[in-house]
Amino acid sequence: MKRLICLISAGLMCGGCAAVSPRQYQAEQPVLDLRSYLEGPLEAWGMFQNRKGEVVKRFHVKMVGTWSNNVGRLEEDFVYSDGATQRRVWTITRLDDHHYTGTADDVVGVAQGEAFGNALNWRYTLALPVGKKVYNVKFDDWMFLMDDKIMINRATMSKWGFRLGEVTLAFQKQRNEK
View 1: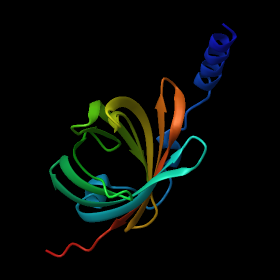
View 2 (view 1 turned 180 degrees about the vertical axis):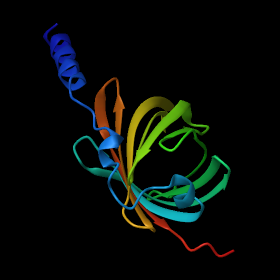
View 3 (view 1 turned 90 degrees about the vertical axis):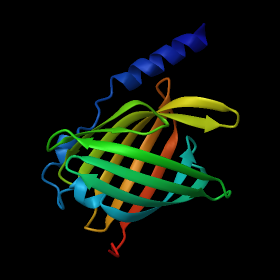
């Protein structure tokens, strides 16, 4: 019973914490134009750290983005440090100057994105395979445009309100050889 009370108390304390709003970055430069940044080839290098901060997995991603009006397609090909590979294809829709939605085969429901200034915050649930099981894990994903080529991405993963770990990526826009 004590354990249940501790879990409920911890959940209530975390639930009371104020979340950061993307609006606080509206004056930051350079302004992230997602359609422009995610057009053409990109590469990213990343890692997953568990809740203790230990790096558990590293990966490299090659991406190609294309846009038609307000709908984009981002093809991501992952190669993990253990040799495993994965492919994810996002369909991203720009709703207005600050709001986006996104879908992919392993995203449960629809990702919601909000962008201001140099920042984009994605919130979504990912069906994450671990061994023979699949867990629905919540992502609070922040992207910050550093300059016209580099974007830093930090995502916090959680399940039932408990932090599981973090994913960190550095994106680099590649020259489009058309």
